[in-house]
Image (cartoon, rainbow, N blue to C red; front, side):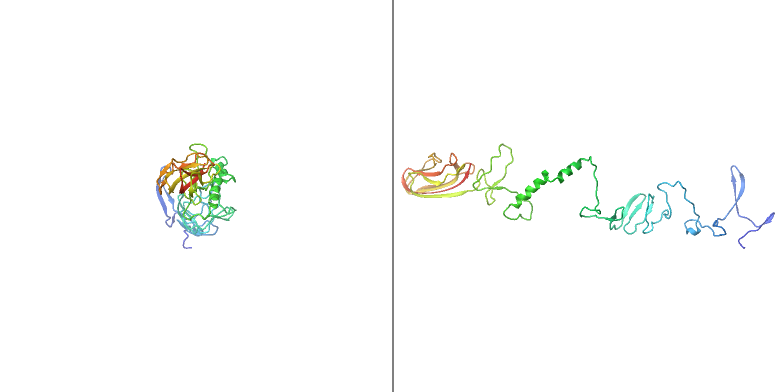
Amino acid sequence: MADNVVITAGTGTTIHADEYTHGTLGSGKTQLVKLVDGTLNSETAITVDVGAKANALRVAPANDITDGTYIGDIKFGEALPAGTALLGKVSIDQVTANANEVVIKSGTVTTVSTVTNISQLGGAAINMGEGTIDTGTQRVTLATDDDGVAHLATIAGGTTNIETAIQKIDDWDATHASAAPADGAQVMGAAYSTALPADVGADADAARLLTDRYGRLCIGKQPQAAKATLDNADTTTAREIVAAVESRKVYITSLIISVDTAGSYWLEDGDATAVSSKMYFAANGGCAITFPEGTPLSTPTANKALNVKGSVSGNVGVTVTYYLAE
């Protein structure tokens, strides 16, 4: 065979060698040897660098391999083949992104390609958005001694302060006579006509806003204004303008009075206690008065009528606006 070398003692063909000087062995030559496949009856040459397994020098892994060692078909500096499963703990210097996989370089996530889902260990897909609590819902478990656990339990309770407060807001809106506007929350007041809310009891206590039944804000004690009129030919005997109401005083906010006979005229309650001073009018005279909201005229005690009285007989016309309050 042409590749074989026949060696005859004393004479023969030149054999390649490497001459060198070794510190211990001294000068000498080392024969250059070409590696071939070690399989019995095989003469296949072994290639250098990366190559097919059939022509590559292979080294069996040691039996004390630890975490972080490259194993099997995972090659240094090469992409992980699509669909290859990583089992156990494998140290990867670089993984090129395949579909739905993550690129890892030197232990750091650098790129994430399109991910369609994340799977549990059992293989079922985990829901990423809203959904019902089931086996496909991702969950986070808090430590039982975490302070937040106690607060979550309070929020989740059926009779918590937060839930009760929200329910009250909803109930308040639900009892309104019409639908709430679409532009946000409303500030609501308590509507009254003749009834009044109870005194809050002390300064600085919280109190409701007071409105009439049309939602108009009431000032002071005024729940809802009313109007009364009287026309009488003789007020020398007191004539009733507003009837007595139990537990309520009459608060007058305006007064119009006209007479055809000169004399003095005034307002008083059902016990003949003066509500206004005497007003002196000439024949065919009168007046129109508006009282400040903070200081209206009023009957001195509750459950008393409002009357008009004159010093002389003659036609009298009276109009008052008022409200009832404690």
